[in-house]
Length: 204
Image 1 (tube, rainbow, N blue to C red):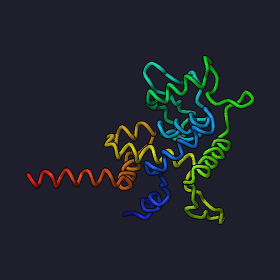
Image 2: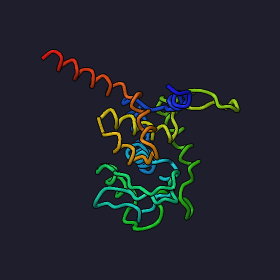
Image 3: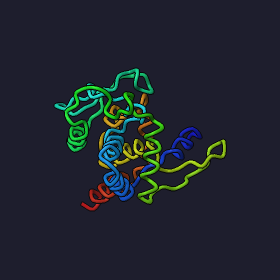
Image 4: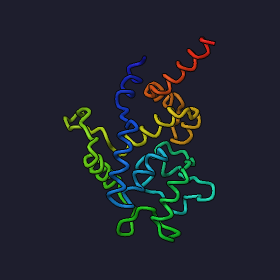
């Protein structure tokens, strides 16, 4: 294993099923906006900056996806991300017949990435799942649960459900499928299922 790959693995923090359920319940208790933000980050695997700049015009409700233009993407590559029916229903309720503008607005502008980071940190604290995972080069404490944690969680949970690697890559916008492959080692349920299936075949 290369040092680069090992360092990348060490930075990947994700929630198990129980932790995700606790965070989701905390968001539901907080507000419709907080519930939707949390659900969209998890369900889509979008980066927080992509979520902030999503406009209602970017959403295709009929075909259940969001268009992410190249100028909104970290990789500068356009893509579309799939959303579940449940998340789309939450969006419909939240926007209350609005047809344009940012989904999450504040004083005529989109909600900032910093505000969403603060929101997720608060929800993680209130749900009891927050922890200090390491310290940065500047000595600042790094917390386990951030908006990017939900992106990592989306990827790992998708692999646990046996979503093909190339589909996950397309959804989250990894430029190289090898990046997506690294997450597979963090999906122990998937590995166990694969071995269990092999053992069953050997017993036949």
